[in-house]
Amino acid sequence: MASAFSGNPIKVVVRFSVGGANPKAADNTKSQRNLSLEFDLPNGEVWQHGNISAPIFGSSTPQQLLGRLASLQPDPVTKAADPAKVKAFVDANPEVLLQGRHFASQPVPASYASVNYWGVHGFIFTNSKGKETAGKWVFEPVNDVKGLSDEEAKTKGPSFLFDDIRQRVQQGDASFNFNLELAQTGDVINKATVPLPDGRKKVSLGVLKVTSVSTDGGGECLNINFDPNRMPKGIKGTDDPMLTGRSTPYAVSLGRRLSEGSKQQ
Ligand code: HEM
Image (cartoon, rainbow, N blue to C red; front, side, top):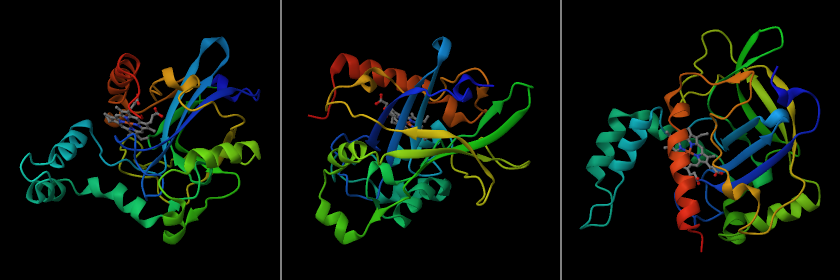
């Protein structure tokens, strides 16, 4: 059994962020929110997560992700992506639109603490008797999911999530139920664009309580690369190429962040 499930409280470093490559992305848009975690486990074991506010990712292989990004590159003359290239790529890879459709169908999250976060990949848990259980995990706000109406989102403006999370943590209102949705035989668990079917049985893996917030630009999360391939004994991934493809770019990204500094300012 993985040491995370001994029943003893475990210290976790949490990083919330708005998804995508733009450090100045607005908080009041229908886009991805991230919940990244590092569990400091007994005997020096570490478990890292990079969870997102959708049950699926926008591509099923690293090659498809690169192809999609290439098709969206602005033309040097028009400064816009070439619609013909975008369409050709999407026509050949329709699954790249599924995640965007998910975000478009949801309201702007009212807070980092009021939206679900999925691990997206399938993982396999082995108990002390060697029995394996496969599933996908989700962090669900203890105080329910809450979204903003379009009008409320406009009024909130582009920068409210950090003040909001400080306030909620102070009030003890930033907790998540950590649940595992169990896969059944035949369910696809090695493809990041395929969610588990609705209604799969859920089991509780614990409760995540955010109890303090570091000062801006500080905190333990800064030097962590949140590589979901860092797992304790008793937990393993699948052959999902989007999972195995994450270690190298995250290491490069951390290296650049440490040597070049953050790009937020
Ligand atoms: C091979 C495919 C992928 C590549 C190349 C990639 C690339 C990256 C990079 C470069 C970062 C920035 C890391 C940093 O700031 O140091 C990042 C962050 C992140 N990615 Fe991915 N990613 C991939 C797949 C995924 C998938 C499938 C998910 C879905 C769960 C995901 C969720 C996240 C999250 C939550 C973060 C924020 C981590 C943090 O808080 O620092 N990524 N990704």
